[in-house]
Amino acid sequence: MDFKNILLDLGYSNIKDNGRELRMRPLYRDSNNDTVLSVRKDTGHFIDFSKNVSGSFEYLVQLTLGLENVDQARVQLKEKYSITEIKREHRPKVSGTKTFPREYLTKLKPDHSYWLGRGVSLDTLKTFGGGLVESGTMANRYVFPILDEKQKLVGVTGRYTKNITSKRMPKWLHKGKVSEWNYPFQLNKEIITEKKEIIMVESIGDMLALWDCGIKNILVVFGLNLSPKMISLLIKADPRTVYIAFNNDSLDNSAGNKAAEKVRNKISKYFDLNQVKLALPNKNDFGEMNKEEILGWKKQYGVS
Image 1 (cartoon, rainbow, N blue to C red):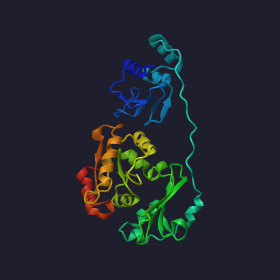
Image 2: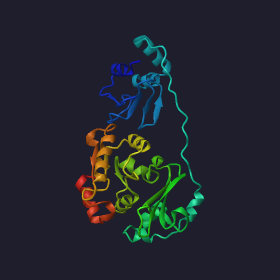
Image 3: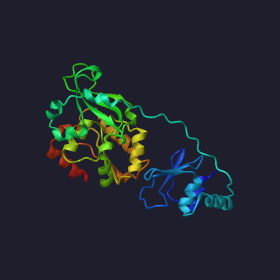
Image 4: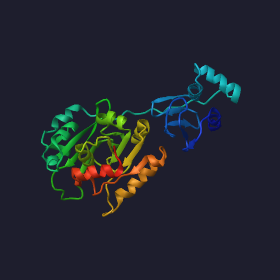
């Protein structure tokens, strides 16, 4: 069934073909995002990521034409396009995100000396509820709890606070499924919604440095690869601008710079290219910059 031609006939334009789906701007509400509405090419099932609305192709026709019910949409499809039956969406069983008992957080000791020594304020550290773990697999790490929007503990991540003497000792150690994390969205959802801008950074260290300077519309990628869940969040948040602020490795191996460009190209499948901007820090990362330098970076790239 050629859903694209039907959509064009209904008045949709600038339809982007993304393989299994078509992307476009919804006609049933105001929007300036040309990719926020997804329509499956095999079933016509649609998702409006920004408004969290989804349903059958008949329901999309109902919304688009302002009809009273789905039955009226079926009549339209039958009379105008000779369509009497549409293949239904098959939804695979989705496994839930693994959660951890909140009792784990009792292991976190209120010793913030590591981050205080790196210039992060106590107020900022208390916002994220982290602390030092003295034993176990996270021993000698300052651990941050990762909570979802329902305040369930879905993981932890810890920064080693001693001198690293072996390549086998990772600077950061994660527990949980990182690809399921949208951090710290449980804390800054309203800020992101208000500012309509999102800054993507590599690590919590970058986030803390920016947060201390009043820049709080941040998402932490925990590396260089953007997960499908984070892409889905970006689409749903529908920001005016996405800033990719990965580490500036131009003086080293340029891995962060190449990854930032790769992520920019990936996000640009869902946003206009002028909405996605590279805004690398002026030093290797934001943790190496003082407040004056960070505010200068903010002004340089026009971050609100």
